[in-house]
Each structure stands twice: as structure tokens, then as C-alpha cells.
Length: 73
Image (cartoon, rainbow, N blue to C red):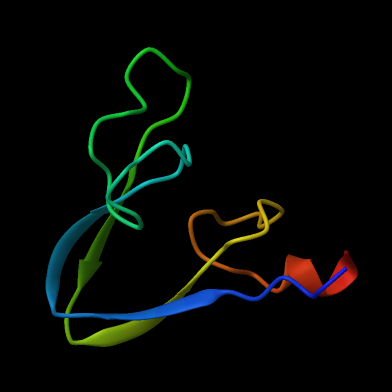
């Protein structure tokens, strides 16, 4: 089985609404697909352009960001 790896994306400064449910068609951004679930998006305010690693394995404790949990799979 290949190792899961995070998806890195550079975001500009500003407010971003990030998907935590995995249902969005606009990953990594929320498109409202979580409605009717217990999930809610993560709001991130960035003071400057930042590269963020997104979880692609589903085991991160800080979704939607990667926390390195994929290394234990």
C-alpha cells in the first residue's frame, strides 16, 4: 500500500473556509455539502501567504490540516 501524503497548497492572506467533512466538490474549500451532518467547516484567518498541508488519509487530529498521523498507517 502506498504511503498517504498530504496535499500542499499555498493560500493567500485572508479568511478561508475549509472543508472538514470530505464531501465538498471544491476541495480544500467548503461548498456547504456538510449541511445535515454533524460536521462544520474550519475557518482560517491568515495574516500572510501560507503553505498548508491538507490531510488526505482521514486520520489527522486537526482536520482538515495534516498532523503527520499518516506516518502511523
